[in-house]
Length: 110
Length: 114
Image (cartoon, rainbow over all chains, first blue to last red):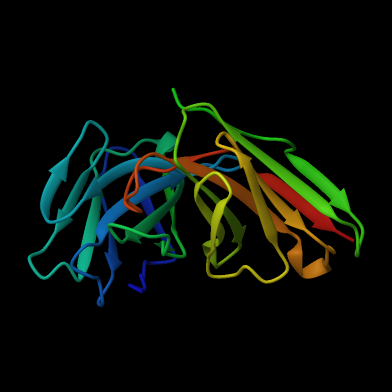
């Protein structure tokens, strides 16, 4: 199973770009990398998913280097409402062995 | 929008009680999951179901069982609740057979075992 490691917390200011890195050294060939966002008293919510290189959607970008041993979630121009816990998930193509990181608490200040 | 609902937001039970946590999804998803979430430990998978009456153990199944009699409903059972099962319990569902598919989470049930 691919174990993931993320920073415990990060602080940022409104309008800045935030990059959160997840380390997954023993990621398997068929594993996908997915990031979720969780607000207090809510379940996690899907943000973005990728396999390799770069993926971008209306919310974030995901950068995955060629060796896939890490990935970086990039949030452009954060606002106070982006304050949340962000989870990195490494999931195999088949089966139930899902590995969530411990999560990164992002605090956005004004 | 996919909706995943959980029967209770908060529960208080006593040690030794049998506890049922119910989860219902409305999108005809194949897969359903139960996680527990504890501070500093993130989400840990308890059980997973990929079809009616089918289940697989996750990373921490001890002390728990599950039931999936209908596709839309997945129940988590604590046969004899203990204080170390005090936690936030999250249910999720996803479509398809790939673990990498997007999971949709319910709001969670915060369980306190006294």
